[in-house]
Image (cartoon, rainbow, N blue to C red):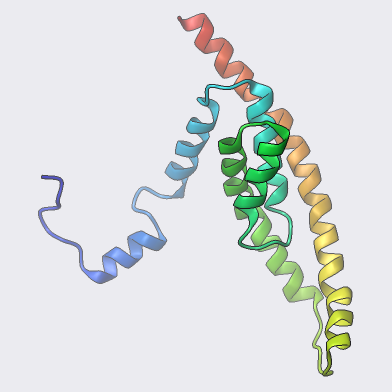
Length: 161
């Protein structure tokens, strides 16, 4: 009943998988609308969003959703909004970290475990400490921005009924 008349070839399926037909803006607007329509307090939603936004700037690749969910659960703020915040911040944090690792790191020609620790201390620690500062500032800004937008939306929703 919901199938296409003409099925897609493998090239079209791959292209749609990596670049959606409707574009990425539609995905962002969908998640943004889901965020502002969460039935919770504006403090809980905006704090969860900013926690997820900050956690996306940490160097724990692959664990961002889990860490932001656990921290949101411990602080008793909205877990779903932290996952959405993590989703939004990943598009900012990953290119910044890749840029830093590509341009700041140097070659490590020496062997041995101790030299790998020295290499990590010389390259990764300055990058991650700098990116954590950027993440803290941006998550601080996002808290007030999301809080304001949710308050405006919920006031408009209350006045409309």
